[in-house]
Length: 323
Ligand code: ADP
Ligand code: MG
Image: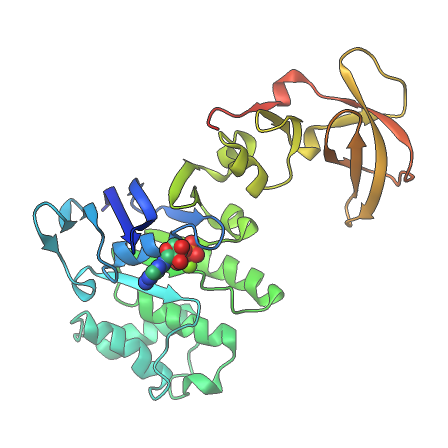
């Protein structure tokens, strides 16, 4: 059960929100659309969901065409058998927790064994006993768990998340990140997750799709996106990057070797500009002679103003292939 997107595109008032895009969501895989605000993530997600009409292209779910501009196929959202979780939870305020989850099942025409299915979904998100509460009687985290239970109770072919954690505070967000990802994995669901938060994307995903200005720049595992970015935007947007040649080659901070002894031919000289203690190590901000500011790490404190020598083994240099 794979979701396949071919050449999907969309403009608003003549301005492209998404240029023709191909994307495959493999069965059981957690894929994240990552990019800054306005890059077209929500537009792409809504077109897959059937909430926004594409200008062209095709979408297949488990081999079945659910959208094709050419064939005039457009399966309505409620018949795509997808679950959705939004930033604002989108719970029905006048319905109880039980009724909210039951609503999703009824809309999907899964009335058989309704009570058991609702109970099972609420147990999964640790909300047993809260069936009769109304959304306003729940915390933000609990409301998002109800929204999640409603989305997955139907055992959807695909579950779509649009920045579901951004309304929550930082501690809860991290907790919910782990919880949602584990539930998706335990249930064997295929997920498409939208976020502008690179840490969220890195920690949750099997596959990350980096977008900018309506375009996919790179798709790959978190390790590939971080360790072998193809595009300078990808290198800069995910993690910290130290540029050897602007837009051409860079090195990640943890790959920078340095010492207080003097330089040889293959090294760079830098001045320590700023030191911050980040728990397990010190993060040091450097002004590299003839280059830009860099970041490196130190196990012990180092003084601002110290001159150090950097060693960059050639094999740790990432060269941009797309510019
Ligand atoms: P993201 O979710 O990555 O922040 P969106 O998909 O919401 O980005 O938006 C992509 C672009 O399309 C933005 O420039 C946005 O202003 C525009 N856009 C989105 N929806 C509409 C709409 N209904 N009408 C006009 N422009 C829109
Ligand atoms: Mg959005």
